[in-house]
Image (cartoon, rainbow over the protein chains, first blue to last red):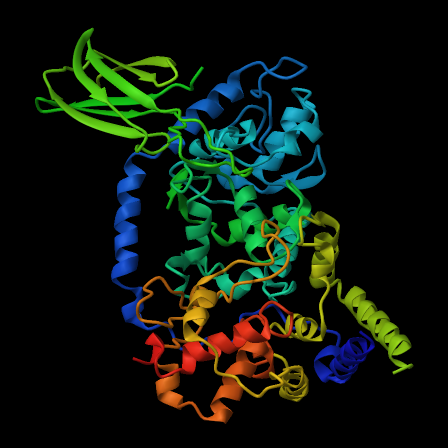
Length: 288
Length: 103
Length: 202
């Protein structure tokens, strides 16, 4: 252990002496120098087949079932206060659902916080309907025999942004900070395998096994990530949101678990989302 | 009770395209849960599609079909405004009926 | 070694001071992560702490100055422990199974060994496996191209043991160094890559 500390100290000492640090400017986050592009023949038949498969699936996406369920949940009087969510302000005024999904995460003055859509709906369920936060976060993700109400609600709200351009605001200082912090979280390497999000999602045309990895540093690919969510997953037939996607990425990154509806996840979603700004959102997606 | 189905029926020419999306766990009875216990079978066994009360599809279905299944049929005859009723029954005796109007 | 702790503290203090002066979003991000992540299963929050390699790669966005990376690479290479008996070429059949497995270290994995090599996640290896990743270079015909001399064996063993000894900010985990793969497992992977009988070299 002592040896390890000494080594760390030596590295720090050297780092501190180097001019890059001394002039008190952090180099901007950047990707490693581009390597030779992946061999084009890999990009290929397998990928084309998967894309065909996905196109067929998109015609009849079971996500629609969750849209319908979410719409019901939105309009029903529920919770200890027996009110619907129709007075919930998703950022465009109380009760406005259309376009809200593609304009979150955003800053909400009443909560003095940047919130992604799931965090915001949970906030409304707590403040308007009187649900207990502890109950909302207890079992946040879909399992074989359970789909959380929040998942259906997010799917419904997302479906009401179908065909609209992604326009995640970067006006309020907290929105700007969320983006910048999110970018740093995306780049942060740690854990037993030294992985960051960018380790797998920072280069073009790469795969893990047969799974295409979007390069989330690129605008075009950032949309690919934002686009399919919330998504119906064929494996297991479960509906999942971006909160789940971030959680499961960190699991595979061998990190500890990020808090559900936490700042860390919202910041990351702000970064990924705002990178996709300007692209048309096609509604809830379907995954292999 | 099970969640509602999504039914879409559209006419083009003299053919009506009927698509049904059913909300059902479709458990095979072979899967084990995280504790290693078998999850009991629970799947849709039969379903019917009726147009204006007249059965046009009388179908069977088994545990090999995926969760939340989608079915598509083409039928001659139905016209815009006709009423399509889909009903399924599962192996536990649960039933669900939903309606849509042909567009 | 007695001076190392005060030195470390002084340096940490210095780097914190610099960070604050910059209004550094990295420092803020780290604070957010430390606040918002929690232990789950074997994935405990101490995993968020950086060792020297991670620290430097994060600090320099994976592109550290060469004098720094040279020094640390040499150190990382020093961590490689070769088998006492000097035998490096294991059983390629076992190696193939290890290469296939991606198990280990997530919060849903059972703690302990054996851990998988995750090799096919990123590399093409045996041509019989068509589901392979492209994060890393193709290892097909790895042995055919290099032969099986002792120096090639040692080099292959060391790369799997600690890839950071070769390229400091390589995306590849340090499988031996962190105790993910055992000596036996790494030998079997060396066998998979180098054994003339292995499908990799057909």
